[in-house]
Image (tube, rainbow, N blue to C red; front, top):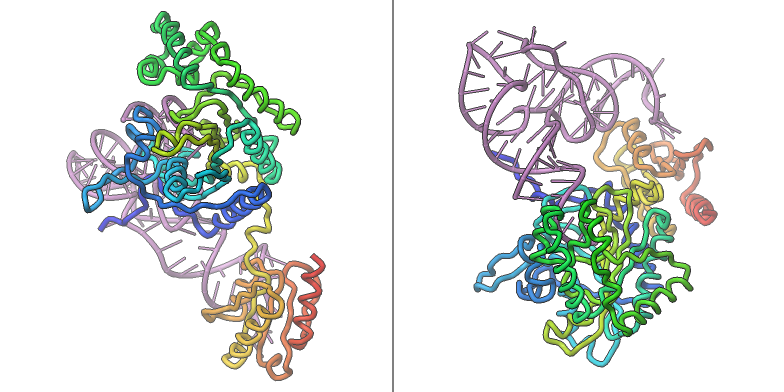
Amino acid sequence: MAKIKAIRGMNDILPEQTPVWQYLEKQVETVLGAYGYSELRMPIVEQTDLFKRSIGEVTDIVEKEMYTFEDRNGDSLTLRPEGTASCVRACEEHGLTFNQVQRLWYMGPMFRHERPQKGRYRQFHQIGVETFGMQGPDIDAELIIMTARLWRQLGMEEAVTLHLNTLGTAEERARFKADLVEYLKQHEEALDADSQRRLKTNPLRVLDSKDPGTQALLDNAPHFHDYIDAESREHFDRLCTLLDRAGVAYEVNARLVRGLDYYGKTVFEWITDKLGSQGTVCAGGRYDGLVEQLGGRATPAVGFAMGMERLILLLETLELVPESVHQKVDIYAMAMGDDAQVEMFRIAEELRDQTGLRVQLHCGGGSFKSQMKKADRSGARFGLLMGDDELANGVVTLKPLRETAEQKQITLKELTAELVSIYSED
RNA sequence: GUGGAUGUAGCUCAGUUGGCAGAGCUCCGGAUUGUGAUUCCGGCGGUCGUGGGUUCAAGCCCCAUCAUCCACCCCA
């Protein structure tokens, strides 16, 4: 019989990896907490229409990447491909944005049926941040400054660069789009194949093309920043000023478009060149129209999402994960003989009570030698031994495993005092 | 969805013109009875991704299929 394997593009995160995830999650939570953001937890499955109405009918995500299926009652459900739509839905459903401001975050798996690749998976994980009810550029700046703090916290600030742009209002985009299409149609022959296709489906995305010929052509194309009016201009300028004053460096990239239909005004991406072709590690923007589009009262909103797999890949590439996150026990307790084992069980419990240290008790038998070997492999700083001698004398043997100090026999009372003093030095 | 590369032990990988399936690491046991991380010896461990085909004989050649990786596309 064929072995059952995980679904393509959906990965197990193994015990060796989970400490890295926990480390990253904790760092992010700490930074979000420092800005007063609250966590929201949402279902993974939503009605299909929610995503169709928010992300945009003609985007690749909705057209061909959603995990959509029929519920038993015939409803069309979809595994969420991103979090913003769910977050907006939840806020509306519970009145969270009614006459009030919200700063929210969430974490969890997203699903897109794409061809897997480095940094791109069918089940992937995002930490998303969304804010509601604030229309000025101050909140845009706060979000970006917050992400910059996170990169510093993680030690990766040198590895990422901020790309910033404004998409203006829908009307401004429409005027620009018309002129852009007109220009590109005159040069349609010179465009790469993908851009010719995009010209019909989503012309703004031609700006994103990696094709050198297309990019050269765009140099003489209409420039979007010539199409934005005073309000959009001021919003963007103020954002830039706030970032300048905060010391956050950025590159204005007028060709940064973003794939989701709901963005307007501010958009940004943090990009690294260390991960191959999936270099966007964090991205977001303003989506003032979305809440209303989904049936709520018009509410300004800005948010972003980080790709956890990509951040972890980057942390590992740059060797930024502290070695200590992999250490899971402080003390490895061993016993020789049934009576000694009974006593060691008691001692281990007492140590956990009194010192708060992580004590792993050897189970599963094996020779003394093999117990020692496991003690070493466990990464514990100390081994704790209990045999006939110790049992008879009412002591335990404390053996340093990581330093050259001698092992010694001490009473349990001395042991707790000793361990407390050793660990309080660190 | 398109293109390229790769699938051999739990992991990393050898495997010659087609001729008995290997190494290192891990794991278990041993090198005078209760001392690990270095050494030495022994052991466990494989439907060679899967299904067909060619052949006296296939890990190796051919076809299909699945998966992984990389790139395109798309995006976090």
